[in-house]
Length: 518
Image: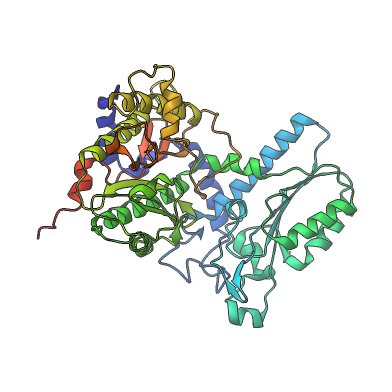
């Protein structure tokens, strides 16, 4: 393989020696300065004596172990949310102006999530709508953000949320309430969610012509869906645009605050998976390994796993999204674990494959080294000629896998070089990369055909899957599957592996099984 080992060693050295904060600051200097300017202005109004709880979410006063003074949610200061909303307004104004210079007025409606129930009065753990959380920092259900952009007038940010209710709060905990929300969330005005319909009607009366922005297809709050459906119908809106793609354009590039949270999320998941590998023994159940990685992530500070993990022993690893996790892993089999955690709204996504008894067989080692060398080649050579797209990395993965599988005798020698990438796709029928951030498969409206840009976080996850039923390969490889996945920060100095703590070299994986010496 044409792996640039000099660059490989250089980046490993950088990761170990360069202080993370100074390294990232060079990538985000301008953005950090802008946020800092906003933060200075805000902190003058949001002092400790004014932000008194309890509110509907943790604060620096009620949860000093989670938040620092000046942060709205852990790791993110108030000023960042103001800047995000301002940038969204600028994107929508610029886009509309290109279409028609007469489109000067806009009303943007972005709902929160609502509680969901597994059975009567038994709720699932609440998870906030990503776009709403990104713009508000509000962790409460049943809310709605409204931004009015009126030509010749200041932009207005309004937050509609649940009114205070003594009886409900006795059971469910405190609510921020409309009265305290403007100061707490740094918005212009707040009202009860029950007043949203009346507000929309009055807005239409005052503002005769404007564009309405609302993502009706992905609204996770039925009450808002119904309000907006009636409003659109009653006022004969011919077209309603979705603001989601513009929000995802913003979310695609991470700020220094977001990078810091993602680094911590990746470190937690890396350590948890290492500990899970160490605990593996022949005869262990997939459920036990699931419980191990889940508990370790939470012990290390994560709020939850980022998604139902794949814990697949033996041939079950050929089911790419296997989540039953209810079998026993036999001696001589490998475990494929795809798991990550959510740390204060930011996700990690890691895959590791290891022998449950601590020692790779010859066949397992062949497949593992093909996948590992392919991944290294993609990561450490990805930016030698500028910023490629994720789709171009997928094309490269197929070429590398095809060549390596043929050299190992898994693909027959008679297959032409031109046909190798196509045949390799039958061994790895998924993409090699996706965007990562607040969601695992983050910003899905952003195509993978665009060039990468500093500030993006992506995954690199080649794999090889050979079901037991596949008869066109040597018998010793049948039933084996390997995937290796890491999370990569794209910087103007090259790729930075955020999950480098997680063992993946064969020698390092096998070392995790060795008895610990005192």
